[in-house]
Length: 412
Ligand SMILES: Cc1cc2nc3c(=O)[nH]c(=O)nc-3n(C[C@H](O)[C@H](O)[C@H](O)COP(=O)(O)OP(=O)(O)OC[C@H]3O[C@@H](n4cnc5c(N)ncnc54)[C@H](O)[C@@H]3O)c2cc1C
Image 1 (cartoon, rainbow, N blue to C red):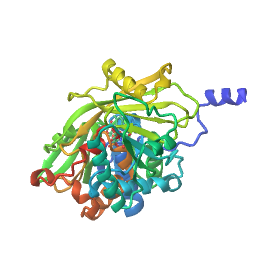
Image 2 (image 1 turned 60 degrees about the horizontal axis):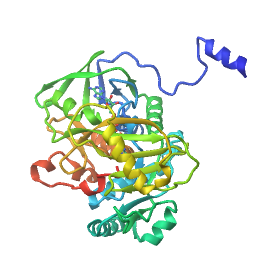
Image 3 (image 1 turned 120 degrees about the vertical axis):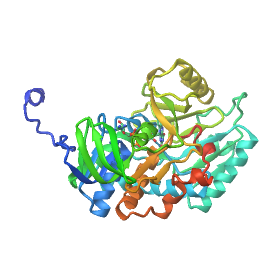
Image 4 (image 1 turned 30 degrees about the vertical axis):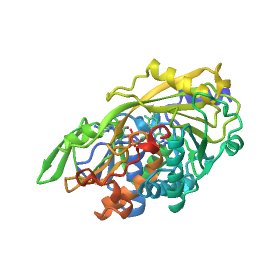
């Protein structure tokens, strides 16, 4: 064993199979150029190649594959939103996740263990009732639960807290979690097998726009052209769109999260509290993943802050006081692009061959499969499918908003 490892370490040709081929030279043109090698860009590339036979596709990633928000999120997957438009959209994503490990031949550690959201006021209970009705109407599994049921779902939860009394909850058995970077790697591996070129360390630095079309994409490794161009750059959406002359209604805020040392399994469902601005889940390795709301100021920085750590920990301890001695392992941040209605921008842009996958704020990981699949359909056919219509950029001009503020504040 030791000798084998040593031989492997000194070997010049590593025998392990590479899922992602090395970055090739940039070709002069492609049918589709995708900017951003996170989950969304890679999923779009995969579905273009797999579902529509569009294989002359390149993905341009300024850093390493899935090193952006895909690598930084807390992997909450759910469909318990407020509006029917959103519930239908995220429900399709949850359904896709269910078969994705099999489809991609990649273990995504997808685990549907349910999500419990707590209500600490009558006003929250009222909105939960509405969410439960809308969810059921759209076919999602969701129900109101009382304190007794909460005790059964999460026996270790502190139901005795005085400052933020728990009045009831919203139980969503369809909620779950998955391995975030495996999602990106799985899509990348299968897309590459189908002929998609993945260019890492290739930053898009400019675009030439002529006659309402993007005619050239300039990168740190030279220029290329795309019949169609897609941007899927999460926290850089406004900046990249500006390269094409497009102004997006987006403000960018840091969002932080943290993880503790591993503990014996004690928490099966995901637990979140909008009132406390905190949510907690336990990973397969036993670590507790803890997150909350965005930082309160717009900023392009991924530093962690002490005040966020203090407030998140204080609120987590209200829910689970017995965690007081547990140590934190890591704290990190990503940049989240927030739209005025807390819903994404997905579909056509003011330019004829430029497509937007943007405004994913704090909630875009769960949408990776549906966004990739449906945007690929729009790009391949030239017609955005019905399910994407509510999320078009044009809605901000017509004030046809899809308001999800109350469903994204602390649960992601
Ligand atoms: C702390 C945190 C917790 C979160 N928790 C959740 C959660 O629990 N559930 C959930 O659903 N969502 C969550 N999110 C949101 C989620 O992470 C994102 O919405 C989602 O990952 C976006 O995926 P993406 O592929 O669009 O972006 P990314 O993974 O960020 O990919 C975009 C890529 O574009 C690249 N790029 C940027 N500019 C350029 C350029 N000029 N040229 C080339 N490439 C470029 C970047 O390097 C990056 O790799 C969370 C986010 C954070 C930060």
